Amino acid sequence: MESQELRNVGLKVTTPRLKILSLLEKSTEKHMTAETIYRLLSTGGEVIGLATVYRALAQFEAAGLITRHQFEGGQTVFELERGPHHDHIVCVRCGRVEEFYDKIIEERQRVISEKLGFTLSDHALTLYGECTPNCPKSHSA
Amino acid sequence: MESQELRNVGLKVTTPRLKILSLLEKSTEKHMTAETIYRLLSTGGEVIGLATVYRALAQFEAAGLITRHQFEGGQTVFELERGPHHDHIVCVRCGRVEEFYDKIIEERQRVISEKLGFTLSDHALTLYGECTPNCPKSHSA
DNA sequence: AATCAAATGAGAATGACTCTCATCATAAGT
DNA sequence: ACTTATGATGAGAGTCATTCTCATTTGATT
Ligand SMILES: [Zn+2]
Ligand SMILES: [Zn+2]
Ligand SMILES: [Zn+2]
Ligand SMILES: [Zn+2]
Image (cartoon, rainbow over the protein chains, first blue to last red):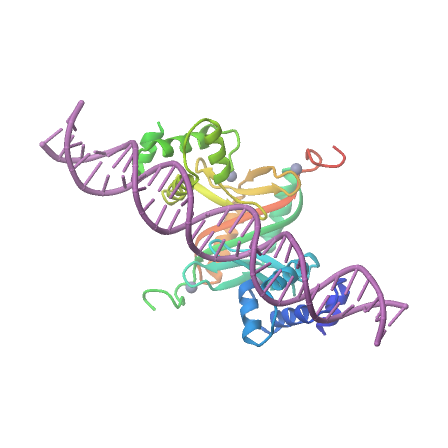
């Protein structure tokens, strides 16, 4: 139950938080903007303010329940933090987002930070390209 | 001369563009926001509108003269495109930015995109950490 | 059920960035 | 150098995502 997840991270269990969490869980789209979440909930008949959506997402992120990604040119997207860490590749034509994990890249990042005297705490890696030949927005499609 | 650089990429040679380009070249800080550039020019007595700074930077980027980076939590920063490609590591405490290039990471990115059926066109990699033990904002400093 | 801190919704405010448009400067032609 | 046409500029208005304010409501505890 989502209620427990909220309690576990020290957040009060409220209707807006539950609705947002379960939307993130049920949605087929893993990566969603605050606006999208707001719109989907509104369409579903819920009365949840946009400010509340932003607030809840910020808290979920601070609590480690979700992560935030800033793909270039787009709005910030959020996704549930489930399963192992991964990075993203985004189609610059149709916007499709795929995930990947590369052990070698992750290791190199540690080595590089150490060499530069940094204590690594986070990283953001996003690849951009075209998902040819299957891109729905390709001219030849 | 910067004038030639502008002509080479098909941009008219104007005073604002020259001032902006030469500020980017002379500045000790490699990575600057539009606001910073605007402020430095204003302080230097130049009358250059903020809109002009943004316009010029966008054109320089399109022409390949500069690159744009979006570090998390901060504004967009720009830097002259000189020398080989590199990625960045940012101190989350003091904001210091260091550059690095890792052949292995760059190669892996190609391999990964191919495997996923993407034609790679760009990527953004930024590491975040603390530049201990030399961080000027460290408590123990 | 009573209490009170915390959360919420609505709308105002913010901040980075872009657009509009009247004026101005550059580059090409004379 | 002078004219002209095209493109650039500055000032300020506009946009859009996100955050803030505050009166009201809700949830956890008693
Ligand atoms: Zn993801
Ligand atoms: Zn595509
Ligand atoms: Zn750099
Ligand atoms: Zn530091």
